[in-house]
Structures are given as C-alpha cells and as structure tokens.
Image 1 (cartoon, helix red, strand yellow):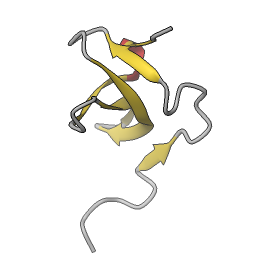
Image 2 (cartoon, one colour):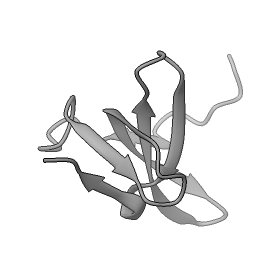
Image 3 (cartoon, rainbow, N blue to C red):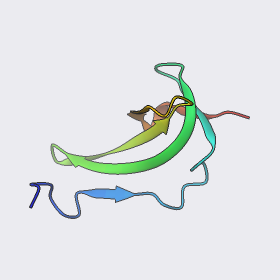
Image 4 (cartoon, rainbow, N blue to C red):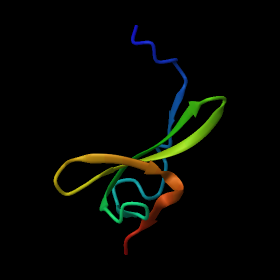
Length: 70
C-alpha cells in the first residue's frame, strides 16, 4: 500500500462550484474548480481547493481563499 491512511481524505463531491470558474484570492489566479478535499493533518481537518488553470496546470489553495467568478 501507499502509506496514505484510508479515510484520511474526503472529497466534497456535491460542492456547487465544482467545474465552475473560481479565483484564488492568494495568488489571483483563475481556473476551474476541480475538487474540494478535506484533509486530516496534525489532528485537524483542513479544506483544500484544487484549481485547474487554462494551461492545464493544477494548484491548491485553502478553500476559504476562493471566490466564484461571475
């Protein structure tokens, strides 16, 4: 096995912004929201947004750092 704890990740499959254009406030980058994942780290859970830019390169940011682009 890979060493990743089964159940340590939770994808928010029903998030209403999935596959819509969002802006990462921290980097000011824009792209399609590919996923919101809850990750357990250091005894706490953090929500991470995965954003795919027009170039196809994907990056992550805190889920609280994204805005829907209208």
